[in-house]
Length: 540
Image: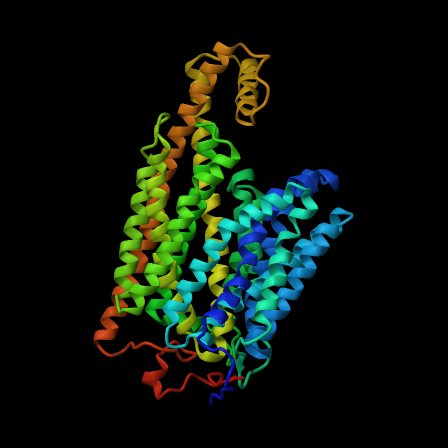
């Protein structure tokens, strides 16, 4: 049963803008953290291990609490928990900025992650209440808005960090305060009308699983896939993921009903999420390294160089929303998106030491457009498909998929690139008969050159020869990595296409229709409208 109170701004642009503002915390916080962590680590005298943990604890905290905050939103009210998340994020950001010690700093970053988990995931879930009959349009607006905001907020975060790292960490709380003020009035509330016992086992299991997977994958590039720093957390993550899936499939009132993924459109959307998030990880991290290592771009040039991709993402989200609203099949959108993403990755694989910027700009623009074509198409299913009472948990799971797949893309591409680079440098030393004592000197020369250090102590002719050889090896490694990642994207594209082909067959046979699912993954409209024991929802 659903009840509504008039005057809650449902369906208005103001509500969409407010929800988009709440989602921007996830955009500005990583940017500010990447800029300010260097100054914080020096000022607080962090060890290398402390700095590494401090840099990632916000992400790990977000991953640990993303489904829990979604489930709490379903029970207590999504608007209420989202607002609480904004308050927690403000407190975490301020605590980080004023931290007198490393321990307080890490605590602040952890608290920040919890707040962003609630505000980001539930702002996405509330799109269903704002525009229930135009979900593709709402998702497109939300995605385009936060992407456009990223262009401005990234500059603001960098400007504030210029006054000191503490000011840099205040960028996110400032955005959170603005978002909180925008969200206090007019947004609809929604929560489950009836709930079972709180799912401590399921939510605890998925929290441990995501922390293990993301932390382990993040260590792969530094320690190697066979290291205990990778194998132990990844194994723990997989074990707890299996426990989570088993547990959620057997209890009557799961916090996250895994049986929903019997639906081919939701199952195919998971593969879509892995594809475009891996693409973005590779472009943002490995392409920026190529520009700096081989072409000697400055950090500012790298940031400006990636702006066209961000602008194309805004356009892609808007166009995808319009196409979906006009009835263009999701499967067609996704096929176009997959082909373009794979194609751009292949094009990157033909880079040379003299490739002009435009060689990279065109694939970035095309890929940015395709990425949002896929994300908007995927996003609508995570908002529209779950039973109404579980919208919060389901919408939050999209973020969990994104965090995990981005970490996987970073780990795989870094491993392939630097693995090939290490072997290539060793072969180059061997071919040139370089003595072991000289190898260390040449390696230090390369590192000093890349970091912009003083090269006056070295023979310019030797420097040029060594750097030219290292650039050729790095470029070859980069190109090979692009082809490998293109293969991974093709793998996920095939899985997605097969699931959506099944969905199309089911629609033609009358076994699949639009609208929410029941707890066991069947269309509620075909099950007599019964969305399960937790299908009712109250709005106010």
